[in-house]
Length: 148
Image (tube, rainbow, N blue to C red):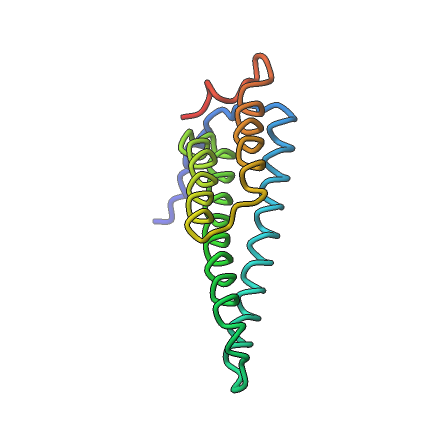
């Protein structure tokens, strides 16, 4: 009555595309940087909430802290989006590249509405140029044509 267990056929994993070192390094650095920025933003938001929970809050500081909190919340949301986009690029998804183009533009719009007009104007074109370069260098290992 005891039959030996049948062997299941081994499923072959789909062939993985090799990415060039520049793209891999950039994705790892972007993942680490966005994770650290997310941690910093969440930590600072927590400190602001704790500060507001005290009974004695200087009323002159309330507008500045509320403004900073809103900027930090938007920054945290953008960092989560960037982390998801980088993970998508690790998995060869084209929407990850589009997200890495769109998220800084959305962040710029929010910061302009909040009245902040500083370094983001310099960082935005550099960021977009970097994304374009790392996706389009590598000769045969060029990433952009291989994104699904």
